[in-house]
Image 1 (cartoon, rainbow over the protein chains, first blue to last red):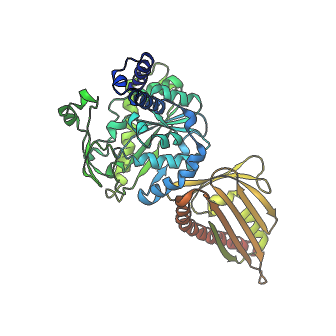
Image 2 (image 1 turned 45 degrees about the horizontal axis):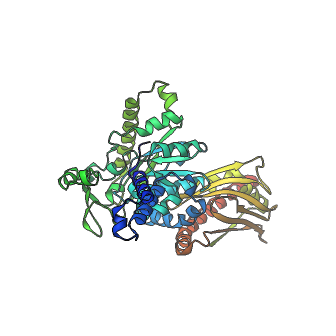
Image 3 (image 1 turned 90 degrees about the vertical axis):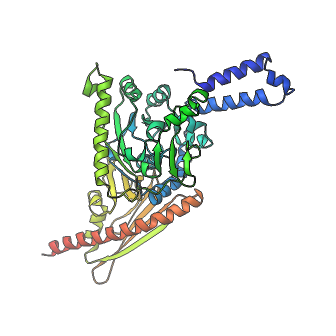
Length: 311
Length: 152
C-alpha cells in the first residue's frame, strides 16, 4: 500500500521530536507546535487506519432510529431486493454514489442493511479519507466506515464481513445534475481486482434520487487548476453546486441541507466473477459489463420516476 | 410503544387458533410482512422460532422471534431474540354467540435511545397500526370462509 500523507507526516513529526531539530519548537520555547503537529498527524493516521474493531453494533442499534426517521420521512427511502444479498459470508456491494458530500443513498442503504440482517452482521463501508478525517469521522467509524483502500477492504472481507464500496466516490457524487442518471465510476476498477483476489461475490446496488438533493453544476476541474489547488493541496476538482443554506456552494466542504428527494435503491443479482469469467478474467471486460448492467438498472429506475424530488 | 387491535370473528375458536398458529398463513394475512421463515426443527408451539421482517417506512424491521407462551385455543405470545425489541400476543376468547373475540397485542421499543427513539416509535406506530388493522380483517375473511366451508 502506498504511504499516505498522514503516515508520512506522523513519521516526520516523530523524527523532529526525537532529534529536537525542529526550529519551530526552539522558537516557541518548547510550547505546542511539534506536539500539536504530532498529535494531529497521529490522529489523522489513526482515523485512516482500518480499525475494524471500531465498529460498534450497540452504537449502530442506538442510532438506527435517527437514520430511520431521516430515511423514512425526509427521503422516503425504498430499498428493494435485499434478499438477493447472500445471507452469510463475505460480500462486496458495489454502488453508484450521489448527493455531493451529503450522500443520502448511503444513509438509506446502511439503515436497510442493518435492519434487514441485524446489526450483528459485520458490515463496513469504504469512504474517502476526507470524510473520515472530518469531525463526523469518529461517529462513522463506529458505524463501520473505514478509509477506502484495497488493504482495508481486504481485511474486512477476510473477516467474512460485507463491504460496501462506491468506486465512483468523490468524483461521481459531484457529477452535474444533467448527468444524474449516469453511472460514472471514472474508470476505477480496483473493486474488480479486489473481488478477483478474494473470490468474493459482487452485488451491484443501484440508487436514484441522491443527485436531486441539490443542483450540481460542475466537478470544477478548471476551477481547481485556476486556483492552483492541484499543486497546493493535490485537489484535482472543486465541485460547485446550488444548495441550501449556502445557495452557491463551492467545494461542499461543510455539506449542505439536502432537498427531500425520494431515494430508491435496487439491489441486483450477485455476480461470481470467477464463475462467470473464468480464471483469466479480463478486468476491462468485467468493468464494462458490470457498469453497463448497472446503467441499465439505473435507466429502469429513471423511467419509473415521474418527477424530480417527488419521485 | 404498544398497539392493540381487536376483532370479532364469526367462527369457532379452534378454527381461529389453528389459523393464527400456522406459520404458513403469516405471509398471507400479515400486511407488510416481507420475510417469514421457520428457524430450527420446531414448526409451532412453545420454543418455535421464526425469522420475520415487516416493512415499516424505509426499512424492513424485525429479527428472530420465539414463542414464549402457548395455551391452546387461548393465548400465544412471542418475544424477540435478535433485532428490534418486540413482544406480541394473540388472545382468543369465545363469545356466548359462538363467535370468537380476537385480540392482537404488539409492543416494541427502542428504549433508551433518546428523543429520536421516542419519535421513531410514534411515527412507526401509525404505519404499523394500519397494517395490523388490515391483517385482522384478512384473518376474519379467511377464517369465516373456512367456517362456511366447514358448515356446508
